Length: 160
Image 1 (cartoon, rainbow, N blue to C red):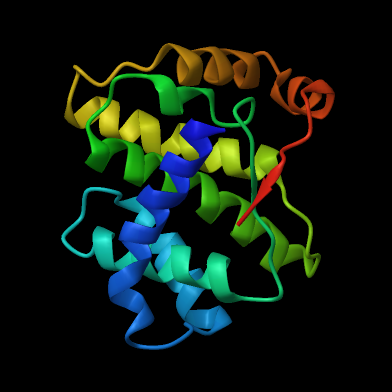
Image 2: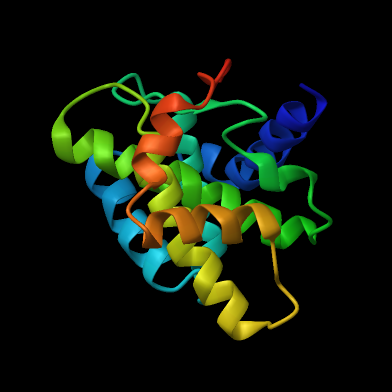
C-alpha cells in the first residue's frame, strides 16, 4: 500500500499545475493523451501529463484503479521523472479506452499497452532505463498473453 500512496503522490505532483486551469474537458484530455503517448519526452509532455492526470482524478466519466499487482514497477529504482511519465502513460491508456468506449470502467490492459509504448520510447532515449516488470509485461503482450494475465491478476484496490 505504501507504494500506491507514492504513486498517488507522483500523480498529484503532475496534476497540481493543471488544477489552476480547472477540469480539462474530454477533447483537451484526448488531445493531451495523443500527444503525450506519441512524444512522452516532448517539450509539452509535462503539461500534457498534467491534463491527463487532472482529468482522470476529477472527472466522473472515468475510473483508474491501482494496486501493487497492477503497478509492480513502482518498486523499481527509477528516477521520479521516469516513474511519473510511466504512471501518466498507464493512466492515459485506461482513460482513452474508457472515453473511446463510453464506459466508466478501469481498463488495465489499455493502461499497460500505453505504458509499454511510452516505456519503449523512454528506453530508446536512455538505454539505462530498464524495468524488469515492464519487460515481463511487454513479453506477455508480444506473445498475446497480457490481456489474459491481467484478467487473472488480483483486482486493484485503490481508485484514483
